[in-house]
Length: 313
Image (cartoon, rainbow, N blue to C red; front, side, top):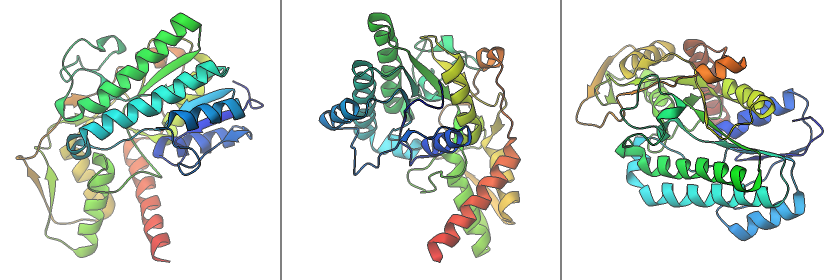
């Protein structure tokens, strides 16, 4: 992958896509293809086909997806399955047929079985039942991995699949209905701190363990893998350490200045008991993350406060 190539980042307005654009620009990539949804609807095959036929990108980062936390996945299963299948099938297929040199498909750690070995190795894919609360998204992502593998085997298409752990950082979604656990907690604790609320209620028991990776670390890993990875098997990208939701909640309270009680609502679902990726394959290639959790959360909180100020100005 060279800076003079034409690079298409699908989903550049999202958390991952935005980080990829920042990293590409920092690394000297000036020929970037970026399209708003109003300009290019990736769920529409005819629009995607016309785009690839006209623009002929050399490299594609497929970061576009319909994403959300447990509540969103559980509430809109058809939307999560249909939209993600449409987006990834349209883009991957058109990329292969229109001469893209290399494509990176961004998946998710939720592809692995609910009770996969911990840390979860890539080989645990399809070895057991999925977590029911996000199975619709997971099934779509597994289909994307298999499509990349099939096109590599049948047509020699250089498509790789990257499986990141739970992500956070600037540009995240802080909507309490559709966001993931870390930005949702950040907003909850910020608003409670501002209101001097006596307590914050957190979904679940607080015992599940989750791994979190700053999105700028993921972007750095993605460029590294685009240059150095050429295998059909998916590869994990994570921090290599995890924390309980309880620990995350108390850390969030400290960062936001919340001084009240933290209550865990055990009537709400916990999701998968633990999600820690085995990142030994990536480490063997020579890449490791650099942004510790607390430092990353503090930076993200500063960004969140600035974004709120921007909305008010």
